Length: 262
Length: 357
Ligand SMILES: Nc1ncnc2c1ncn2[C@@H]1O[C@H](COP(=O)(O)OP(=O)(O)OP(=O)(O)O)[C@@H](O)[C@H]1O
Ligand SMILES: [Mg+2]
Image (cartoon, rainbow over all chains, first blue to last red):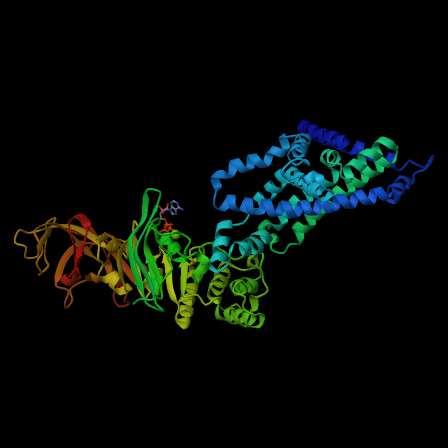
């Protein structure tokens, strides 16, 4: 009985810890009009052209980051599983590095390596800087992407499926595109949505590379206005939760993935 | 020249030899089984034919073409795996069509071929299902259809039945054999189940520790085993230690029993071997070796009665058919048994080669 009480208490503390700031933020974001609740702050945000510009910029960046991430991570995780299982610890270590190296260090490294007087002057043009930023994002999302894909690969018999496809005449492209990727799609999607959330909220890299991303905009508004930052925070939360919902949905909708869970 | 030729195949993993001097020539349309205990290298041989393993030395030829250096997807070989290897994200029809799409077969032809394959394996209604909606036996039939759809030159089956329950195993193996006969496709079938190998195959290869011990039709493998390993691995066998007399005239002793084989046997210790079914109860024409023994146990198996007795001090099993007019002998009785001298195999000392007849 005592244990029961304590576990409820712990749960309550947890809920309060997470929910209270959120509720406070929501409540505050609705108070722009004096004396009554309103969506004025939200209206201001949605009417601000900079919101639309920075948000769509970040969305496009996120989509490219996801595409590049999939192209890098899926073949890598597949090869490590198929051919070089002994390299696994090394590869896992590398994918974890972005968690221990602060983004600010990474981006300073980038700026030094790819500045206008370097061999590959990526920072010289807007497109070049976008590519650099996208690569930075891909690096940041690597730990999540790799782990998600690797877990997905564990759920299928990679070797047998590969050999079955090979004996039917398939080459590596076909095997990866038509056999491996579709079977880890749910895992890839969950990695992709995490990537999306990371890219949308990222500040340091975008700010230091001076790109018009959503993160710096968030910071700008936060420094200059009262209620709108709260509204933006709620919007950011909503987007993240929407992504989480999409992960769940994707898991439930894919017809063949039901078998593994039941 | 044979259709599929394996010539002096050797395969080592690191320093461990797994397949040694493996020779096999298979005619077009032949059904050959690789039979042997776990770990004897059956799968490794099959994977070398498929191209998943590269032989350490030796050559593989299909229809006169050397394929030893070719990658699996260049070999035109169909393979059915032990574990269900269907693509989980594709329906049954899409699974079967996979190889055809890879080969860029046109849509109309592809669909016709898929329909033909589905009806060949008796799953015409199941084209739209996903693998997880099928039973194990159905999945293996789809795997077979998928392998056959691309019209491979050789079909390889690695214990395709071992994950299924006994009843389906028997019906599916007959079905596989029937389809194989109908298409006339050259087939290698790997199994460690001797009944499967004996009942299905045109020829059986009995393997032990990476070496082909004997290659021959099932009847020959069973009746005239070339080595002691084959004799003991395939079917049940009574093994009796005996000593051949100095005269070399075929008179042997085991315990206090004397056996006159009526053919020359070099003097010294020998091992006699008899299948349980060549020994009969009572005397009969042609069963010229007669001995008596106490009946120690009787197993009534329905159509067959298995009797345990002793020859000298060696335990001896014999199988007789059940006949309604002759009840099984009682325990403890002294029975009279007989066997034809020509049915008694003499295995050399150390169990190397067997001299037969
Ligand atoms: N990739 C590998 N690396 C190292 N050793 C291997 C490898 N594959 C197989 N072996 C070894 O080779 C031997 C033969 O293996 P193989 O799979 O051919 O046996 P098998 O006859 O098919 O056995 P089973 O009936 O259990 O399937 C085994 O001792 C196995 O441990
Ligand atoms: Mg095997």
